[in-house]
Image (cartoon, rainbow, N blue to C red; front, side, top):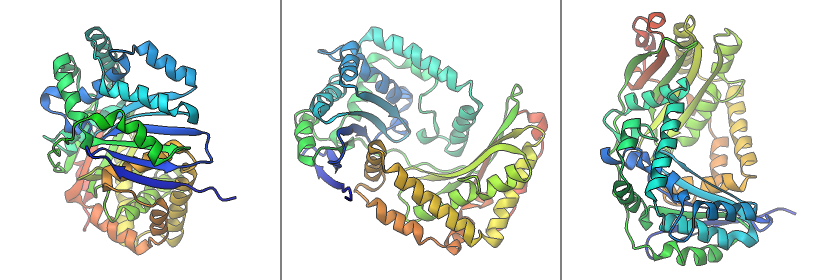
Length: 426
């Protein structure tokens, strides 16, 4: 018998959005509260504050301690987690159907009534400083942050999600509380649920908790401006040079997003993709190389990531550029496009077996489109992508005047005008 699901959506009087995908054949419910605000919505005085909030809401409320919260979910056999990104914060859980109401009430209490105890803040500040230190020990993470800072200078979108050690040390409890209050405005909030529940059941839980919040929404962030060029960040004690070649591209909600997905997959998304075949398999320059489109609400990046020995770093860049020029001149073969499309379609269909993945799709639709999109219609659009469309879009994306090359490694092995190798026509 074919299993059916149904997506329902409602907006409460205070502006909070509720989206539910009913999957009655599951014995569980996965639900979350999503704040359509992240690190790019911070100010200089609250840099890293969203990430601290994410940690601190777990530290208790006036009526529940950290231990009460953790034991509740442990008793249910459930899981409660959270994350912070540049444009969104997420708090979510998965429990058996009969535990949904209690789990939701606990999560709501954490997010509506966090105590932010001073002693816990100091302990968690120390934990976050350790986390920042851990990221600063990772060459991949170092270059990812420096690339974003170089790509979007003087804009919060380019700054590290966790803030800096200095900014984290400077956030007081009062400042954190004000930042939290600015986040928890109903117009910023979306509640999603997938599994054995209904829109009516979820709204009942929401109205008794988040529905009591007064209407309001935070102002939009400052639009970013992409900065092309080249930058070599010197770091001597690395075995490999980290390489990121990025291009200004389309936002996440772009009408061309399906073509961008096929382009990224054909170029560097699979083991048979062009970059993997040419740079790793034929030349052995790298262990891995990949390409992806990373979209935001008002900007986008098309990024190629690789790591190579310092002796092979320049040749890796040169060969990557040669691959791009060949695509601009000749395009992809029909077989390459077919494989890229089938891989995308198969991956999304398999991913939709997970309630958590389904919930992630619901919130991405809300953040980037402000409504729900049928995933099967998107896959139908992917099926219709042609090699001509991909080549045409590649010509718009892979331009020197919208390219940023960043390398982390020994300066002595990367001397010279690396960007000069990116001379090609639009």
